[in-house]
Amino acid sequence: MDCVTSHIPLHRRRSRRFVTGALTGLLLTLSIPAAAPSPADSRSLPRRGSAYMGIGVLTHDGVDATPLESDSVHRVTQTEGVDVASYQGNVAWSTLWGSGVRWAYTKGTEGTYYKNSSFTQQYNGSYDIGMIRGAYHFATPDTTGGAAQADYFVDHGGGWSNDGKTLPGALDIEWNPYGDDCYGKSKSAMVTWIRDFLDRYKSRTGRNAVIYTATSWWTQCTGDYAGFGATNPLWVARYASAAGTLPSGWSSYTMWQYTSSGPTVGDHDRFNGSVDKLKGLATG
Image 1 (cartoon, rainbow, N blue to C red):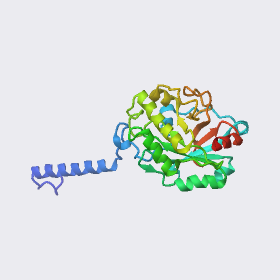
Image 2 (cartoon, helix red, strand yellow):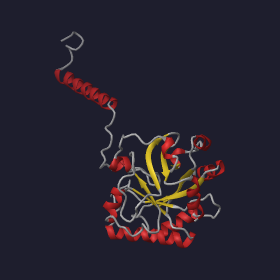
Image 3 (cartoon, helix red, strand yellow):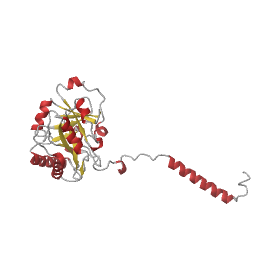
Image 4 (cartoon, rainbow, N blue to C red):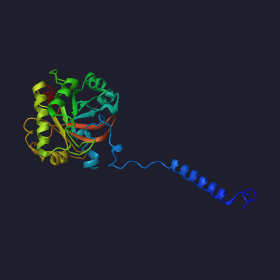
């Protein structure tokens, strides 16, 4: 014991040691970063409106690292495209055009509560550079009905015009990033919701909407329903060297989202055909 503290009563010395220890513990606690929220913690969920095409693909289906065919091979029969959302901001469309991208889809809406703040630059920018463009709607079947969401989509940029450069709108129906994978719906209820959306979109625009989905989600949440294959083009999501098994009802895909880590914007896609065939889809 040193001479400075020897005269302090024992109970005071203990009290000071306790306070010093508590302060040291507090400082250590403040210096250690908080652990990341677990997946079950609601704080780890994205905010409503921030979802984008393919948000659940890596988590649920992963990625196959097998190399894709060379560009010289696939461009004979397929046409490169991209899909974008608000998080990509102002897109370098001239760069994408120079790399061979000839079509693009932009997120327009989500549910009946969100409009993409970058929609004008993205949707018109791709058109102005010469691309064939379209808009997509991120479905949230747990918030409002399919018909209501189709109306919201059409009313906020998701319509179609017969100008030869506008693709029919796309319904992005995939894993729920905000909760239950299937939005709390039974398989039959999910099919009904999708049908309501597609029917309303067709009645509003005269076109059959494209369906974007992943085969595993479609099987899980619709029971691999086959009833839309005869009318609605399929846009399948699979990050691999091939599109793989398709949902029932479709013998081939119209579009394939094959990566989320492509140049410039991340999400890259392939249209299953030449530019002339792509123009055919745009004109109906």
